[in-house]
Image (cartoon, rainbow, N blue to C red; front, side, top):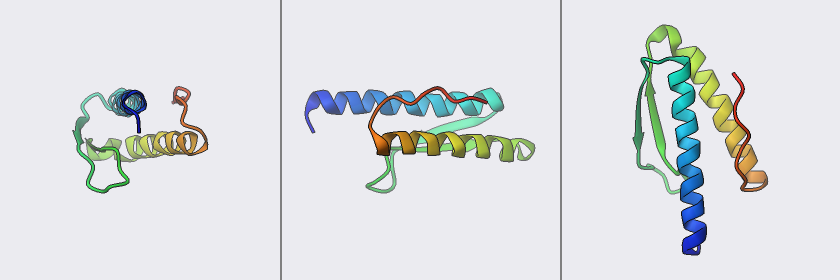
Length: 86
């Protein structure tokens, strides 16, 4: 992968991670978010989100839905995804 392509990929990855973190914080402002390096070779990052039990299902479903949208868009064609709707 060329340096320009790597930089573009990294920039897109950072935007997507930021989008997921923002979504979690919008749904649960008290959420604690930690971004870790990938554990597996096919991962880009690990986002750990801690929320109160009463908010778990709401945040989990929203993040899973958005993560799936991002994955599907990337697998079709690596373009920037459309903003998530809540």
